[in-house]
Length: 218
Image (cartoon, rainbow, N blue to C red; front, side, top):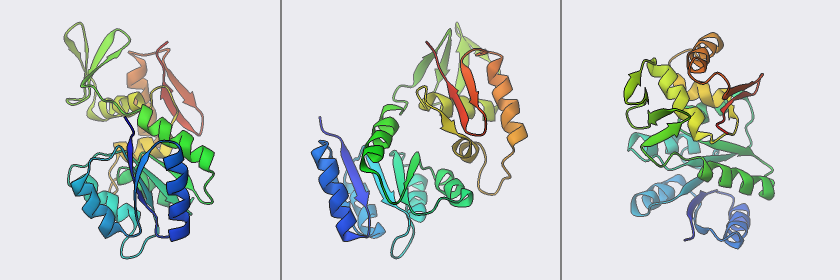
């Protein structure tokens, strides 16, 4: 079954280029040029992925995703952006983005990122994590039916790492999930939460210094 993508890009020529490429890769693509049209379509159709430009007429892609997330829409989202500063990346992840790609866009890289985001979505409520079970809705970890004590942020961190499906989750993305925009993210606190998880998964969590973390079960 073909997967559906909602593409929002206000450059008409680039929009058409992306549409042609994605349809050649067997995706069903709905294309719009402004955020209001994207919002209307999101209410009428269930998409597998949103692909949003950031700099748009009327409002930014960040603003649009904030509205969608506030309405309960958790559709995976990749931003296309000419911005590469940390503040912009943090804002995108804070609003609920799953990934981003910078312009000029390499189409092969875009396809890899799309497939990675779609592959790593946690689709079941209970996930087997080695000898443990993790309830993705309640964000609780248990061993043989006995709940394991984890802090709220450690549980959220475990969820984000599991969504990575063995791939590295960037530091900025982890911080955006753990701290709200009004809170100050802390590298030291992040290391504390990682240490809490390593008590249960000492060999499975890997630190790529300065890049991010991943969790792997072989």
